[in-house]
Image 1 (cartoon, rainbow, N blue to C red):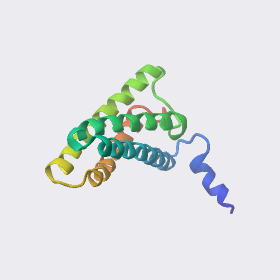
Image 2: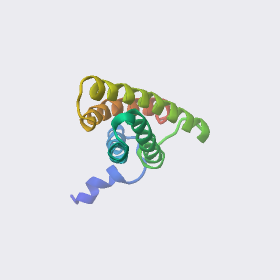
Image 3: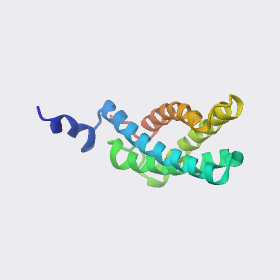
Image 4: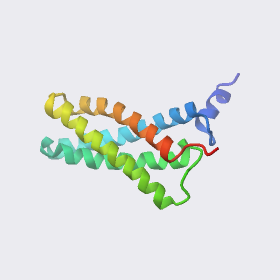
Length: 145
């Protein structure tokens, strides 16, 4: 069996397969995390940790945009809302909850527990990833039956 035959379902075309969607969401999330963490590091190194929560919010927002584009173009095979404005609003609300979780966890891990901000970001990313996938799959991109 050719490797292309194995990899094609992971990367090409729309699919209702939850495991493929989870894999794609992981790739999407990893891409967003790279953008998010890179921007967070850049802003923090340039302007200091005094405004860490602001840098966290800004970098998270850019990462949210990356995830949205991946989600509608590649990850999920169906959309529950006909209105793109409503879809983006719900997506953003899920993101705002994710941002709240991110801010709270960054405050806890970096601020209260004294972990390095990038280690704190790594732990936070895993927890918020789970929230984001479940909420988006359930509210926006579940298969209609």
